[in-house]
Length: 328
Image (cartoon, rainbow, N blue to C red):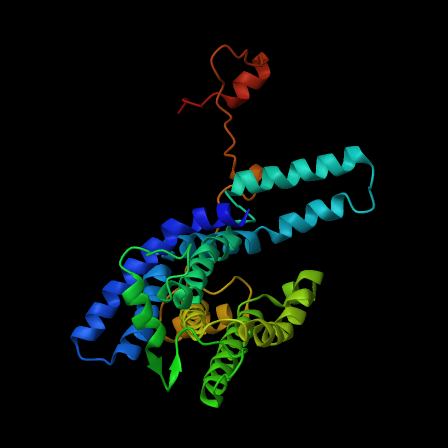
């Protein structure tokens, strides 16, 4: 199973190795020390990955907006079948929900795509950096990955920032104090950026009605559990992986700030703030709509008789009253 997983990740590791090597060549050309050149190459790799994920992020934003706008219709369906636990009612409710998704072009799983697609990049980078020491020592099964040969792996493994190797962990035997301090600082920054991103999302970019449901309460719990998760898991990651994680968190936080300010969720505090800014500038704020949300309202009535349709006969008295009066 592990070999199969490694085989799937190898193309990603190969691509990351070439991207890191190219960024290192650039930073080394401008005169950065070797350790900082490799550290900044990880930052550059993160930027490339997030730029590649931008189309998915845009789809995620549109999907989340649709999900928020269809909530009133979703609540109507849930209220309609409230208390009905028989299989027929459950099946009918699911059919109406799926029809609502189809009509509005909404995919409830689109918000998970960026995270799911980013995960292989993270695991591939973890393997790439975590195996540098074994690759540099020539351990069997740790062959060259593209430009990361045994000599290059030894160079990366021995290069340092603030006196710590990029492959060093918080845990381990004979770990220097400066490495533990650097790792702890990176973990704290990772936790702070994640907390800030989620906090501003919940407090500024969610309608008040959405904060009372069970899902929002779970999000609040996760908001305070994430720092603990980072503290537990972060001590097992190499410094290079922590740099990647911190950089992608900073990107997410900045991206979230932009979205909340310029594309706020309907009914949220951020939307009211944007509406006031637009009003002060003398501009109208474009309202978000979801085509197909109201199937009956979207249908345009057509009273004209269709081909082959029999018209209702009119009586003589009715015809005279509806006929145009041409008399003078």
